[in-house]
Every structure is written in structure tokens, then in C-alpha cells.
Amino acid sequence: MHSRILITGGAGFVGSHVALRLKHTFPAAAITALDNLSRAGSETNLPLLEHAGIRFQRGDIRSLDDVTSAVAEPDLIIDCAAEPSAMAGYGSSAEYVIQTNVTGTYHCLELARRTQADVLFISTSRVYPYGLLNSLPTIEQETRFALDPKQPLPGASEHGIAEDFPLDGPRSIYGTTKLVSEYLVEEFADAYGFRFIINRAGMLTGPRQMGKTDQGLIVLWMAAHHWKRPLRYIGFGGHGKQVRDVLHIDDFCDLVVDQLQNFDSYQGNRYNAGGGPSNAASLQELTTLCEQITGNQIPITPDPETRPADVKLYITDNRRLTADHDWTPQRTLAQTLESIHHWLTNAGDDIKTVLLGGVRP
Ligand SMILES: NC(=O)c1ccc[n+]([C@@H]2O[C@H](COP(=O)([O-])OP(=O)(O)OC[C@H]3O[C@@H](n4cnc5c(N)ncnc54)[C@H](O)[C@@H]3O)[C@@H](O)[C@H]2O)c1
Image (cartoon, rainbow, N blue to C red; front, top):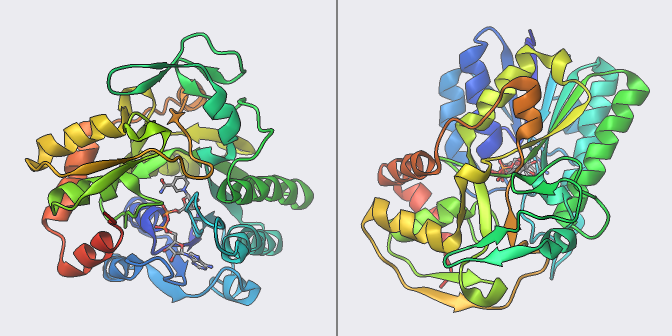
């Protein structure tokens, strides 16, 4: 098993959950979390990491020195550092998202080249072009858009979007940085002989996600209900019928553990990993669930204009992971939302300040 693990973005939502799970599962492993703490709220995870015996190293993956000096001889690098917003680079410079998401990944690969460490790269469903996704035939139902069972494109079906969905067309600046990084991972692994796995994650959520309007929507929605702040249904007519599937971060961590324990059987592949059709909801439906859990109703204003690169409907087709590795999400959407609400109920003022900073009327 791996004994010296570097997790970039290790103080962030995904990185800190993965770090804590790996320390719990492999207590003898030395784990370093590298993070520049640029995401508001990531600093609140540091005591948890320290308590678990995970070493925190403040550093920036845009710096090759910071990455290569973080751990002397890692045998595993998990790249979770990113600017993860699909809105990044619109209306302002794209320099940070490109330097972090592309150059930063290259620095991880340079470290892997030098050390022959295995690489686990956290990619995204955002690699699939939004134009193609939005062109898929849908049926407008009372509370949501649904995929028409008859789909013209490969990789699209009533099960959702699979790995062979076409990749031609714009996908957001963020999505492009992640796809470029996927190609770099594959290319470097081929050139230098290290092992890799790529997970194209759908919408991940759970406790300790610092949700804001452009990333971490499920937590943002629950936080607004919990603390009674207004929200907006943005885009696609402003009716809240757009749909996402949702994966609890613990289900994602289950997958990562299995991948590390059976690296060779996953090696060299890309996998879609998300909540799947049974864990999908529209914003309207999410509102109803949040109302039921919190007992609160809040004003939600329609804002019909669709934001750049937004997607009407995305549901993950997990069937490759299920068929090849027997992985399926175990937590239901309701359980996922309950776990977030439980966290918010016990959250301190620091978390409240971070989350409410992201709620705009
Ligand atoms: N959360 C999701 O729904 C989701 C879905 C698909 C893929 N992903 C991917 O998972 C990874 C983690 O995302 P997340 O949701 O945990 O986001 P996050 O913002 O919570 O975590 C990212 C962490 O990286 C750090 N970071 C940012 N720029 C950095 C830099 N230049 N140097 C060092 N650290 C830096 C931030 O401070 C933060 O702690 C990303 O690669 C993202 O693309 C996330």
C-alpha cells in the first residue's frame, strides 16, 4: 500500500475528506496536505487535519518548488487543488484558474516523473461540452427537465452521461483546464511509466463544503434555508427545473479507498462518478427537500438569464464503475441533505460567515 501520500488542495472540501478517510483507513501512511488556503473556509479544516495526524504544508501548486519540496519521496499524489468554479475566468482574468488547474497539475506530474508516484486525478463532469449537453432532447415535466429516453448522441441515455459522450465543443474555461490536465496526466504517465486513475466527478457535496453561488450549490441551498436567506433560480427560464445528480463525499471516499487498494485494476482509466439517476433533483425539488428538512420556507426569485457555460441537465451514468468495480453510491439524496443540515446546525460562527458570504439575494 501507499505509505507517503501528497494531497494537493488537502485543506479543501474533497482534499480534506479524502485525507481524513485515508488516514483512518491506512493509519501507518504519512499524509501531507498541501494547500494555499485560497478558498474561504478551508482554514477551518486545519484543526481536523492536525488532530488526525495529517501534516499540513502551506504552499501553492503554481510553484514547482512548493510541490516538489512538500514530500520528499511520495508514492501517491492525489491532485485536489483547483479553482473549481465553472464561472472562473468569465468577466475577469483566467490566469488563476489556468495557472492552478493546468500548471499546478503539471507540477504534480513533474513530481510523479521524478519519484514514480502513482497519480489520482480528480477531474469533473464539466469536461463534457455544455452545448452538446444542452442540445440533448429533454422532456419538460412539472418540476424538472428529464432526459428523453431516445438520445441521438453516444454516451447519453436514460442512465445519464457516460464516459464515451463526445468531447468536441466549448465546456467552460474550468472544464477545459480539467480536460487539458487529464490529457497531461495520461501523456506523462505514458512517457514516464507511472500509474494513474482519473475520476470525472459529478456534483459532490457533504458537510464542510464551503458552498457559494458558483460552486457548492447544494450546501448553499441548504444554508440559505437553514438561516432563512433569499435565493434565486438562475437561468433556463428561472423556473428551477435544471437538474443535477448529487454524490455524498463519503461515497466518493469509498471509491478512492477501493481504487488505492486495487490500483492495477483501475490503472490508466477514466471513470464517471456521481450520484446517478436515483440521486438527481431539480432546484425546485431541492427546495422542497430543504423545506422539509429545515422546516423553513424562503423567498426564491426567478432570474431567467442563463449564465455562461451553464448546463440544463447533468446526470452521471455510473455503469462503468458499477460493472467493472461494483461501486454504486450508498447514500440517498435525502441522507446527504440531512448530513449537511446536521453539520450546519452545529456549525460555528466562522462557518456561518463563510457560507452566508456566498448567499446573494
Ligand atoms: N466539489 C465538487 O462538486 C467537484 C466536482 C468535480 C470535481 N471536483 C474537483 O475536486 C477538486 C477539489 O474541489 P473541491 O470541491 O474540494 O474545491 P475546494 O475549493 O473546496 O478545494 C480546493 C482546495 O485547493 C486549494 N487551492 C486553490 N488554489 C490553490 C493553489 N494554487 N495552490 C494550492 N492550493 C490551492 C484551495 O484553497 C482549496 O482548499 C478540484 O480539482 C475540483 O475540480 C470537485
